[in-house]
Amino acid sequence: MTSTRRPQVRRVLPDDEASWLAAYDPAQFPPFAVTADVVLLTVRDGVFSVLLVERGTHPFRGALSLPGGFVHADEDLDSAAVRKLERETGVRRDAAHVEQLGAFGAPGRDPRMRVVCVAYLVFAPDLEAPQPGKGTRSVRWVAVEQVDAPALAFDHDEVLAAGVERARAKLEYSPLATAFVGEVFTVAELRGVYEAVWGHPLDPRNFHRKVTGTPDFLVPVGRPAPVGPEGGRPAALFRRGPATSLRPAMLRPGRA
Amino acid sequence: MTSTRRPQVRRVLPDDEASWLAAYDPAQFPPFAVTADVVLLTVRDGVFSVLLVERGTHPFRGALSLPGGFVHADEDLDSAAVRKLERETGVRRDAAHVEQLGAFGAPGRDPRMRVVCVAYLVFAPDLEAPQPGKGTRSVRWVAVEQVDAPALAFDHDEVLAAGVERARAKLEYSPLATAFVGEVFTVAELRGVYEAVWGHPLDPRNFHRKVTGTPDFLVPVGRPAPVGPEGGRPAALFRRGPATSLRPAMLRPGRA
DNA sequence: CGAATAGTGTCTCTCAGACAATATTGC
DNA sequence: GCAATATTGTCTGAGAGACACTATTCG
Image (cartoon, rainbow over all chains, first blue to last red; front, side):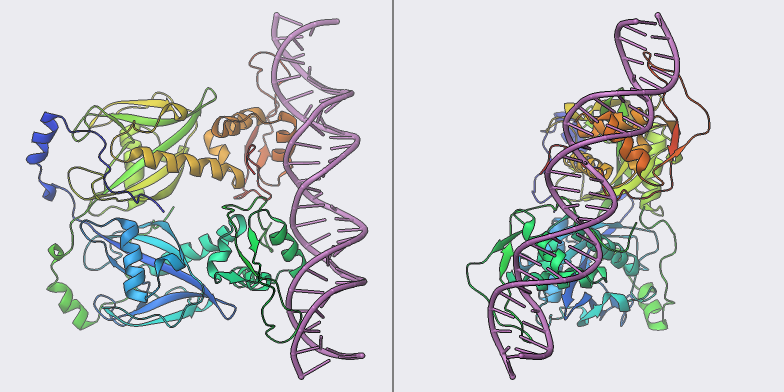
């Protein structure tokens, strides 16, 4: 997360600067609005999915879009994204990984006025039915594969594509796949995340060796073992470990 | 680069939406200004350096900051960054690699008003003395190592730190080190880039094997060989190849 | 026992790190 | 020849991909 702390002015203003500031007119700058929009990704039943809302207000009323909205005048960008996430989808911030994706600000991307969207990327485990908030008619999970190009309001197709590609890349060199599963999980569940996000099957044996052999990636949970879904030997349980990167990386199949 | 194309509204507005739009009042949204600021990095004489300007206007007049400025009302974010780059530093866009770094928008980061900065990261070869533009007193290269925390105006210390870390990471898994050297270069020059950016010496033999053995990373130039700086066998010349990623990655020394 | 899933072991190939040895140039 | 740099080659250990095999559970 970027820029969480509040006061950023680290120099006391000298007298001439302070007097200049008093005479300053903000209207001389081009007027922009800033939104914080959220690419909330999860894996549900083995399907890599994104949370979309049906817009209840203009513009693009009735169309699907990413959840999000205007940043308040005295609000941090990160805070705005988390607020939108919680209010508009019912997802709690501490249950997910949140990072900034980037800014999207082509002129004309919003018919109302010049709007720069600061997009956030969120990884969450499969959550109960999310709740639509004010201004949205409904919220739904949509398989990422089913969102084909001209599907979303504004330039959100482009934002989503950037988020999906970033997610796929991050699984390679970070332990963030654990953000898609619950507090405790099995190696098979974690493998399912990789397979869903990458759209490639992975060898269960080699995957097991890799994730259990990487120091600080997984921490075994003392508790013995859970149930088996359709039979089979029960799997061991793990928690996320303290590792912050994966070195060497987990290699994504099907690339040079 | 993100969002280069212009018209982004891809739905014709229905009648009710158009009439609503006509009655729309932009003043109802919190007023923001948006700047495009540039982290321009290079390697000069083996020193990883950033281009800083001395501010000629308020706020932070006289202080060092990243080059940048306000985005125009009808201007793309990328275009604004490139414009700032060219006008404020004299660097031509096609001689460099440009990518978006992220948005920085903590309230209070600019004493004038609420300003969101969209930062861009630029890699350029060592360039002639850059030219200061309007509003800046001077432009200078500063070694990245010498910029210690409370040194720059606004929150530019934070922006610079993000850019430097991104640059260090990108050398690992992308062929972008070639953006720091000229059109044609030797393996030793390229190695010098890695060593300067990472601050670690690399084994010349292993480095040579890695970069020449990675397909499409380097293309040998027909021309035989150049001069030797202080004697020694003349080195072969290469151009950047068509590769867009480095797999497996070039591993940065000194990390788990 | 058979089916199904979890986990271990083995083999091979690629590749990074260490470093010897050779090649080519200026002085 | 000597110094300096470029380039090739060799050895070793870590680790990925392929896959046989063992372990544990349910019915």
